[in-house]
Every structure is written in structure tokens, then in C-alpha cells.
Length: 194
Length: 292
Image (cartoon, rainbow over all chains, first blue to last red; front, side, top):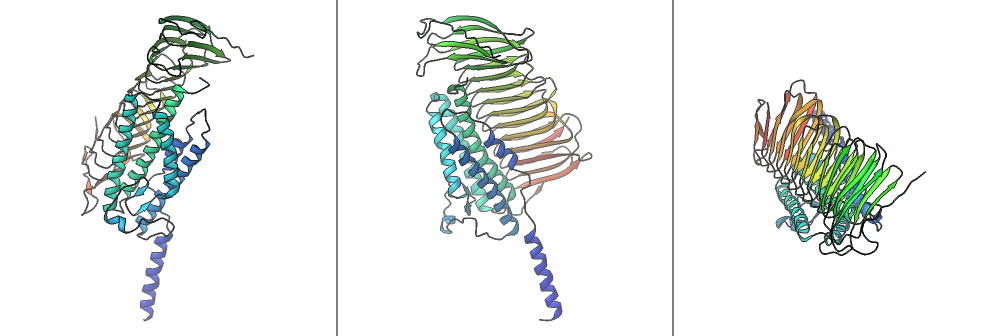
């Protein structure tokens, strides 16, 4: 290897290193919207702290997941800190809540948080009229179908930043809608201060 | 000193056998807060020039009581119903409040109609429709399956409108609008915005309003279509991307494929001096962008 080869190698290495060191951020700041979702007050007669913390954890995971996915997509490199779904599951894609294009998922903490929000909603749904309940369930199903659809597209095109953004936002929508239904129903039915 | 009074309508502890008329009035601050809770029926609120709150209407036969009380600058109007009731709780309330009042209304299936109230409004219903006027103060309107309709008067305010399946229609709002729905359609007609955030999963999005210089507009839908026709000139950088939809642009530049192997299209261009920023993202929804 001569000096020119060394220089070329060094230049290439430095260029790669420079690319790696560049922070990759989402096209827009997702945090304010997500923060708004979790910070909206829900007055409940029973303690809501578990829910709030779980939702906060979910949001942190969503934002962290979004940034991580974007970074990996842009850098073309894996990250051992992000859980990777077993390669066998990529062959037969089974969408699960929190999955991210079949290659990654948002982790057990997100699943736990999602379950807490779902449990709260289920409790509230029992108090709604059959028509309202059906409407809510149909729309949550609509969101989940959309998540499924985006997930499948992302599985085919894992580097697509548009799909990553849409998926994160639709996960956010799902949490937001579940929380909103809970909040509106609670305000109308159970607030002790009104 | 706090002043609390309570008017109980109907016999104490015993549900009246028939629907009861109600006609009560109470002194109130000219810019206080009025909170209303009614499960079923309707709530109509109108602003008036007097510093009083008046409640008229009819209570359902199984309603336990109408709570009508004042705590300092807050007035509470609540139709109290049995925990478990099968019918007989539908109550229609017509409420007059000082025009400068702030308003909070919460219902389950009752429709909400508001007019001539200039304070902030927070109106929520599970399945009732919401119809209101917006003036100089911020509004927050939310329904699960009911429709939301708001008529503004072009004063700059902050509007947050959201439904799960109900449609959202705004006319002549200005300032900031944040509208979200899962399957309901969104439309913002007339008015002018410095910030517009419109988001659906399946619902269509229609925008026929101005975007002010330096304004910011973010539109996102998974499967809904986006139809934007700016009222007047617009100066902004546009960044439009769709995974599987079409893009029709009246401003000139054509969209391009984002990949040789995927159906996606994107369109980036600058109109005017580019002081504003518009981003539109869809999965399958088509995008139409024009001005009149």
C-alpha cells in the first residue's frame, strides 16, 4: 500500500466518520405534539399516576424510537441498543403493536404503556352507549389498520423516512385517541368537581 | 368572600315523576367562568349583556336534581342523574351567560350550541354535535362521534378541534388552527392562518383559506385526500411527499418519483419569497394544491 492509497483510505475513513458523527434528526420536531398529548390533564376520581408515567414512558420510547430508526435508516448501520426482531419473523410479517417495519419494535416498556392506556379505555368503554362504543372501536381499528398498512410498506422499504414519520405519528394518534376518549367520557360522567 | 348558593329543582332525594320545567337566574361576574354538565338532551348557551346567568328548559323525569351554584367567579350548572338510569334523563337547557364569560360544557350525548360568548370555550361531547361561534378568545372543541362546527369572525385566536369520527368544519377562523380526526373530514373555509396543523387517518382534508406570510402549515393523513386552495397569494417553501398517492400542483412544478422501485412521489418548490413553510405527508391520499 503506497502513500496515495493511504491518503485515499484516510480520506474515505474520515468522510465516513464525518457522516457517522452527523446527528440525524426527524424532518420536524415531533416532541411538542406528543408532549401535548400526554400533558393534557385528565381528572379522574382514581389515581392516574400510573397512566401518566406509562404514557410518558411510551412517548419517550416513541421519540427515541423515531430518532433511532431515522438514524439507522440514514446511516445504513444497525444499532445494538435497539431491539431487533428475530430474523425469522421477517419472513412472515406479523404486525404487532409497537413494531416498526418488521425489523425493530419499540420495546416491552412501550407495550406495557400501551396496555395501560388500553385498559383505561376498555374500562371507560363499558360506560358508553353501544353506539358510541362501536364508533370508538371501529375508529381505533381504523388506526390499527393504518399502522398495519404503514408497517407493511416500511417492511418493504425500511429506509423510507416518510413511512417512519407516518408510523410514529399514527402510533401517537392511537395513544392520543384512546386518551381523548377516556378524557371526554370521564369529564362528562365522573368529574366530581362538576 | 366566597359566595355559594344552590338552587335545587325537584323534590329532594326523590326523582320527579314528570319532566320538570326549570327557570332560574343568578348574579354572575361579567367575565367569570360558567361550567355546564348535561348527559343527554341539549345545551344551548347564548351570551347577553347582563351580569347574570339564567337557566331555562326542561329536565328529564328521572333527573335527580339541577345543581346551579356559584363559587366566587365560577358558576356551575349540572344535571345530576342516577348512576344507573334507563331513559328519563334527557334534559334540554337554554342558558344565558354574560357575553365575556369563559365557558366549559361537557356532555355525553347532548348536542351543544353556543352563540355570542366571547370568553374562552372548552366544549366536549362523546356523541353530541358541537356548534359554536368563535370571537376573540381561544377555543377547544372535542367530540368522539359528533360533528364539530365553528363560525369565526376572522379574529386571531388559537383553535384546537378534534374528533374521532365526527366531521370538523370551520369558517372564518384566524390565527392558529389545530384540527385532528381519525375518520372524520376536516374543512377550514375562509379565514387566514399563521399556523395550521391538519391531521387525519382516513378523513379528507379541505383547506380554502389564506396562509399568512411566514406562516407554517403541516398536513398529514394516511388514507385521506388533501385539497388545498389558498385564498390569495402564498409565500412559502413547499415540501410534499406521498407514498402512494398522486400530487396535483397548480403552482407549476411537477412532482417527481422518490425511488425507481417504489410508487412514492415528492414535490419541493418555493412560491413567492418563501417566508412560510408548508409540509404535506400522506400514505395513500392524493394531494391537490392550488390558489384562487
